[in-house]
Image 1 (spheres, rainbow, N blue to C red):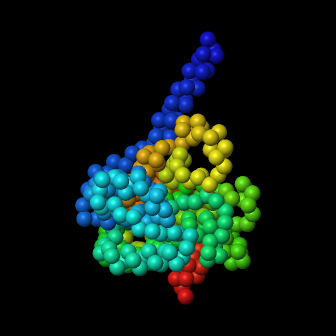
Image 2 (image 1 turned 90 degrees about the vertical axis):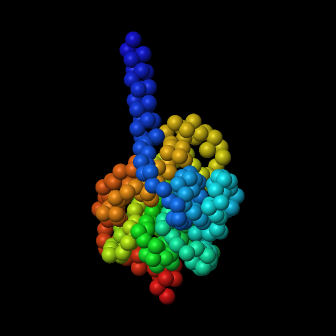
Image 3 (image 1 turned 45 degrees about the vertical axis):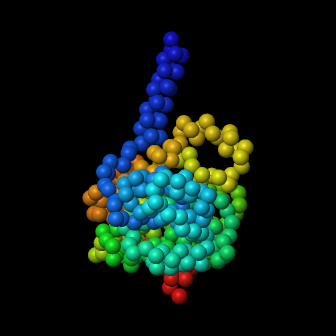
Length: 309
C-alpha cells in the first residue's frame, strides 16, 4: 500500500510539474496587428505564425530559407523571408540596408536567434557571442530610428535562464573577441550562459537609452524548449534524450508564449527593460542589472560591431 501511495504521489507531482512548469502560462493578448510589421530574427516559427494570424506583416530574418518554410507556407502572403546571418556583420548591415529601403515601418523587432556551438565567425568573433549578442545588438541599433518613427514599438530580446550562470570577462573580450575560451562541454555551456547574460544586460542598457522615446524593450526566458537549439549536438545524445525532452521540455507553441506576451500584452510600457519568464516579470540577480557592466558591454559591443568607428 505504501509503495502504491508513493507511486501515486510521484505521478501527481509529475503531472503538476508538467501542467504548471512545462505547459506554463499563455499569452492573453487579443491584439490584432493589421497594418503592423514585425521582424523576427532566428526562425521563431510559432511566434511568426501567431503574429501572422493576427494580421501582421512578418519578416522572417534568418540564415536558412529551408528552416523558415513552415512559417512561409502558413497561407499568409504577409509572411516574407529575408536572408540574414547574424554571424556576419556584413550580412547584418546588408539586411538592415535592404529592409530600410523596402519596408516603410517596423513596429516589433524580436531578436529570437540562438546558437549553442563553439567556433569563430568571419569577423573573428566567437560564434555564440556574435549570433546571440553582437548580431542582434548591431541589427537593433541599425533599425531603431525606423522604430522610433513608427512608435509605439517594441524590441523583444529572447534570453535564457542560463544567464544566471553567466559572467562578462572584458579581458577575454579584449584579447579573444570571445566570452570565454575552451571547447569542453563545460566551456561551451559557460560561453552560452555568458552570451545570454549579454542579452539581459543589453536590454537593461537599451531601456535607459530609449527613455523619452516611444520604443520599449523586454527580455525573457522562454522556458526549456524541445526545439532546434541543440541541433549541433550528437544524434545519439538526442535519441537518448528524446523521452526526457518530451516530458520535461516545452513544445514550440508553449515556448513562444512569453515572447508573444512581451511583444503584444497591453500596458507593459512601464516595465521596459524588465525580464520575463512564464509571462511574468521576474527579479534579476545584481549582475544582470549592473549599470556599469551594462554600459561597458554596450561600448565594447559598439566597437566590435563597428558602430563606433
